[in-house]
Image (cartoon, rainbow, N blue to C red; front, top):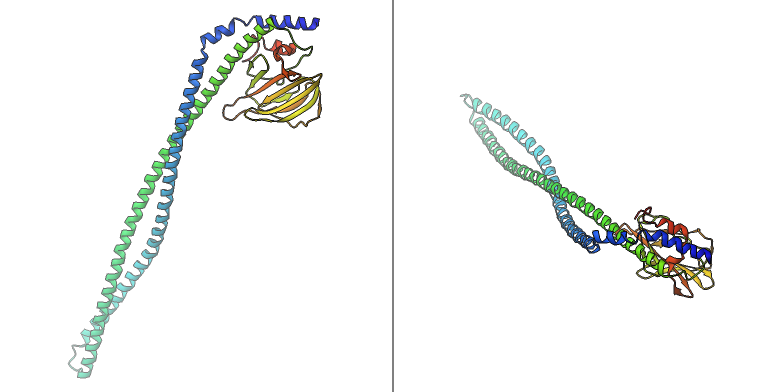
Length: 355
């Protein structure tokens, strides 16, 4: 009992120095102002997120257009390549055939001027000349058809050039959208970081106010049990005291340790609060760990003091986590703060604790 009295005096001594500072700190940095800044950050994050979603939709549409343009380009390019080869080949063949036919026709005409030709020879040459002339007409007709195809090829080449220009415009627009998306993402990260800093600041203010409440509690109340419990985690960014249990706030993943030897009474999940571990220490005394933690303990398992019983989990949405620790006697919540050991009390002297 004497130990408990000395523990109480140490508690009053350690926390007495902070009774004035939390109020002064809370006054200089108004909690409602910090909360308003957090709400503003949340609204800005929502707005930026909406802008990013709109950009994603535009990018998706432009990427689809880009793929369509590339597909059309590929088809036209294939037609241009095939048609260009055939047209040039046909024009060359027609030109060669026209030259050859004209030479033959010229030769026939030249030989027809002889006075020694018979009437049958003259008739034969006339028929051959008509055939050659018709051939020239047909070749000219084929040349005209091929030239029409060549004109169509030129039109295809113009369409291809137009698609190339459109491709460039779409790529430029996509690049601009990507840059705007990067800017929005940078703004989002910056605001999210600031929001987390504000949340930490708010947690620190609340923690200091809780410390003040603890100090008052230490002066006015006595420990209800002749037992001392250690803190369930080593590193925490703040404490929240509600006269029953203590909420430990943290930023990093770390092990959760048993605060006292006992037998695991329950391991499970409590809706909207997180996972829960209950340990029976005998004589109707139980300790409860609730919140952002995971545990592989089994019901009925014996554990020692300071034994690892689980792992903390940080919430993705805030980058923070918390564990609520409470001691119960015959299912009645005790003022847990008054049952904490000297190490916990010494650590939470505000002159040395990092909150």
